[in-house]
Image (cartoon, rainbow, N blue to C red):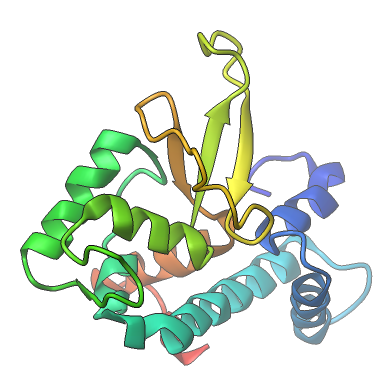
Length: 194
């Protein structure tokens, strides 16, 4: 809700919660618990999003860190970068993470632990990344079909991984990454404490 289109608020909440009923309920509970009065204001939604985003990031780390050594470093490496990537740029980024030895996927996460493409698949399957496939083959309209690992778990069967396909960090994690970046430069909160 960085713009003034407050009528788009529910769509905003839906995107942040990845359209799952339990997450929508949790997000709205955070907003209600943090508010002083009804109706909810923009600040209530922002505080709820910050708490919810940090909680979802922590969930990924708790659930999947055993499958990828230092998953935290990998996820936080997206802070300060564009949240949308071409396939080749994402491969380079993940290749650097794996090549430096900081991120160590196991064979439970990736068939080939040294493959950035397999790491992309892993981050997609756990719900951190989404894939944006252009609706127009020439991508003149700039419209994409968005696929994520929760609603399209079978996406990798015959999936395109060329540069016309865009990759993006799920909007659920925007605030956690922003808070992490702010914390790293000493001006923000420590999201892990949320």
